[in-house]
Image 1: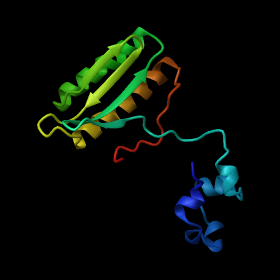
Image 2: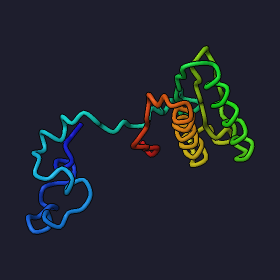
Image 3: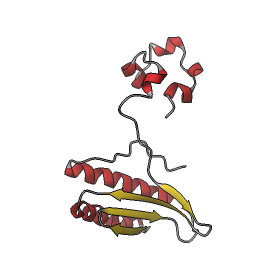
Image 4: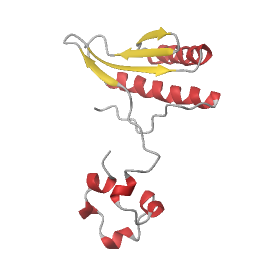
Length: 146
């Protein structure tokens, strides 16, 4: 992971603006960029991958749960949301793992509807983890445009 200052560029952060910085800059103070990369908490990227097999492009992600009750809660809420959206993904349940494959069927590729459904799945997964008090796999930095 690249330090924030490498991504943004040092020229953006002038000395006079550093004293007025709010947010993470004021919290972390004068830590060097190398220290920022070694902090124990790092944001995770979304675990959705784009699969393109020459005929269909789709978003795919596998969610892992601690037991069947959590799987059932996740899938039940997902089914109701799909009905509301009128956009349905392929749901594969294998033990404590649920794999979601979504794409827009009439164009055979990923569209905004698929990205919305992927975001809903991520949010639902976090909600199920929070409800049971065992949030193990957190998606902090959702990026559906890759």
